[in-house]
Image (cartoon, rainbow, N blue to C red):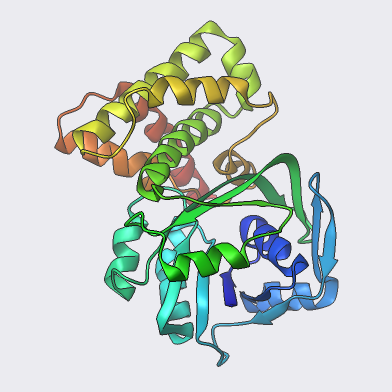
Length: 307
């Protein structure tokens, strides 16, 4: 199976490296600057799940290659349109597109661009980043990538993907209910990123405060209320499950949004918190905690643009 990973950052670089280790035919679609860096340093992963260094296959959007059997999107939501434009030449009629973006609204845009049949469902749980030298650093054991047909079927093609993803040092999991899995991930990442980024703190100090724990629980309740108003396929007990999960995380855990803010980089406030805030208004659902967090995130964006 010919696999194209769009991006060689923390997520794409990590999962692509794990597939390379098993001998899969992996190519990374990257920008010129990242290509030059990786040609010099190779792809270097430093992980509690095992270190790895190898010379990756690299292409840029200007090059001719493909088509690829599987195209894995690991970009941020604000890079989505650029990624769609970049992968068009590499996507054949039978190519599968597997997005690992946070949120849910990107699915509609990908279906509009490539058709219903070519878009799979996907998500990942991993805490990873690039260091100043472009090395992928992954410090916690969690390294799960979940994927599946959005119909829930175990098709011949998705079983081929499962075969390609087997035997790695990461947890690649085929789901028969990827739609619900994506909504549950959306709930988790919107709450986790909103809380840690708005409060500029890892999760540990926040939840040690009784007021912090109540704020997390209130935010989860608001988000679930919006999702239920949208008829999203979320479990009745998901707010309690997610609160328990957040309470069990390592105390130093930060969201990628918080890390991006610390680096002065763009964030996904509109794609995550903003999208649900719009839906809350449309369905007349009160979300004061979400609105407060979104305001804080937008102020960061405003101040970043003025620097």
